[in-house]
Image 1 (cartoon, rainbow, N blue to C red):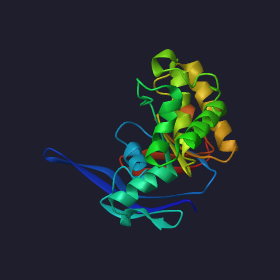
Image 2 (cartoon, rainbow, N blue to C red):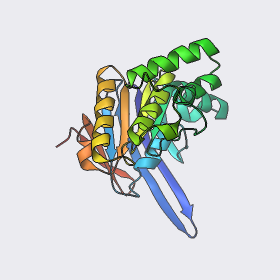
Image 3 (cartoon, rainbow, N blue to C red):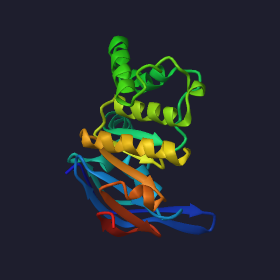
Length: 226
């Protein structure tokens, strides 16, 4: 079992009001799955993704990743967990505009301590994998939105993570380009990548093999697309 989470709860204080973002959420995810988490704004799906990615801690509950107790990790161990186990893909790409596509991909490998020659080889291999083998020297401003998201996916793959977390990965793209990105994620999943995608769009979620639906901080459905 890659992910085993039990009774996760998370509450935020918004002025005088308490917002219950997660309410006793339990789930498990096997290696090699392609899972979509869906729900309207405020349903808790992004909070759940942040907890599973080690970006936020729940108020209570248990969370194990590959048998390790993530919630028992200190900040340094949690940073190492994110860097080695999780690849993040965001709606807004989050590429550094002054760096080339290849150097954007290399950046997390710098933090991981990889030597320059190996970083370059890994980044170039990832560019080929996402269909951008000839665009390594291009800056983000010289790439289309779809190409920028491909670079972001390549960056997420560069550290060979156990899990890819994708937060609305097609949200900033037109419909045709969005389909191309979903095709790429499906191809990566077939090659063995575990993909967890957060989306509010049921049509996009239906491309996944399993859907976890959330509402008001709780899981209300977990199963195959209907």
